[in-house]
Amino acid sequence: MKNSITDLSPSKAAMVVGIAFITSVFIVTLVDDFLLANFVVPGDTAALASDIEANGRLFGFAVVGYLLVLALDSIIGLALYVVLKPASKNLALLTSVLRLLYACTLVIGLFALAFQIIDVYGYASIKLFGYLFFALHIFVLGYSVLKSGYIPKTLGILLMFASFTYIVFFVDLHLPKTLEVIIMLTMAIAELSLSIWLMVKRNRLPENKF
Image (cartoon, rainbow, N blue to C red; front, side, top):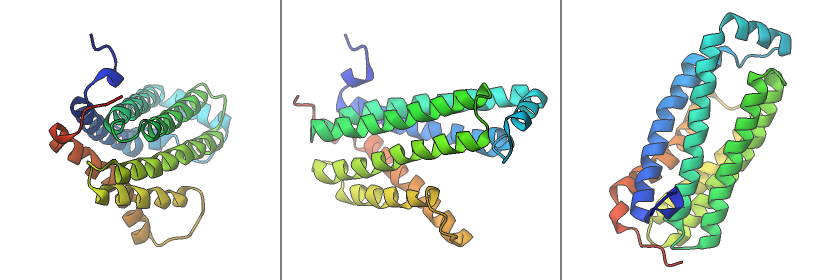
């Protein structure tokens, strides 16, 4: 009896990747633009505590929303392992582990922020560390897609290129606003393109041989 995501067939795992990613985009947009954005502002722990006390319910919804997104990220990581396993078990495992490390890092940071163990500066530092795992994940994912032989190489190249755009989170390049928007769109389009392709072409994926 199938009792976990890694027991799914590649075609079903591909559908899981697509649905989970698209769902996470909607949730993270809601959280970042309408909920959590109200709290992620420069300040110390005391200021954060004041904000939480004044908007406790709103902050609670934001935390739950982000936890849902991170849970979906974990599901995506496991499902990608199944999708990529027929091509290379080692690359598939590395791709999955890096995404899980990203999700775990942000969960730790989010709980530390929620319980006021750290201030927003501390949360930003932990989130940046998480983005390092995510950028590596996207690069390895792109390389895995490129080498798979059954997923378009253009998607692999796009993902690998997108992984380098994450440098904007680590280095203040003072880029024009228009270029920043293009970079953010590149990040989103890379994963979205793969997700849509997997959903549409899921029945063409090879079965696991391991």
